[in-house]
Amino acid sequence: MAGETLSECILRENEAVFDAMVRHRFTTDIEAGHLPSEVFDRYLVYEGAFVETAISIFALATAKAGRIEQKRWLISVLDDLANQQIAYFERTLAARGIDPASFNLAEPRVAAFCAGMLDIAEKGPFLDIIVAMFAAEWMYLTWSKRVAAAAIADPLLNEWVAMHADDTFANQAEWLRRQIDDANARLDEAGRSRLSAVFGRVQALEIAFHDAAYGDNA
Ligand SMILES: Cc1ncc(C[n+]2csc(CCO)c2C)c(N)n1
Image (cartoon, rainbow, N blue to C red):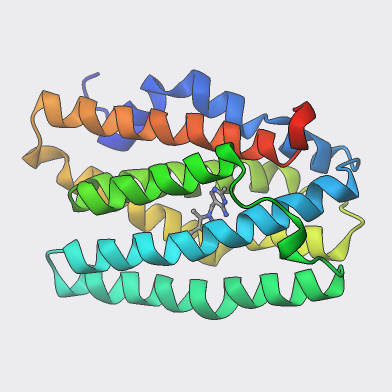
């Protein structure tokens, strides 16, 4: 549509699947204060595996970035993932007495999500990686900002939601969004629709990943 940025166009074209994900039962259960404890435990183990995958994805983006300013920013994202996010999982798994070995990390929907994201990063150009991570981060920012307004009794769950609703995370998601909008003029229609399809594919993988946190009865 005329006067629209590329990120606005991508969000409009994928509105239905994006809304389905930001309204996923995982987010509405947290908001309503009744996320089952065993679902949070399973989620933490699956999510910890994804954060390690995210380090590989951002490392590939760093390697493929054309400009030093982009590399510099992505290195700071990597530092945050390796030092703040991984530390959250180490602390949280220990505090909740979770043994990751007692969960199935080969769960098909979790494996499909991690492998699907990594595949985009390995095979795709820089902008595909940026769009895939924009899809994952913008979605988390959107539901976390909504859910952060609710009183979350579990301090570790509260911390997780707050971490995705704060300015640092919002700046990260907005940086990705700017990369997409700045590239718009250099793309043709086929390139734009390919990126929009990447965004939609990531939301579908995300929905299955969050279903998996509920076990087999999702
Ligand atoms: C399943 C899943 N999807 C998206 C995010 C959002 N997110 C938060 S940090 C990060 C990586 C780099 O900042 C991403 C993508 C998540 N946490 N877990």
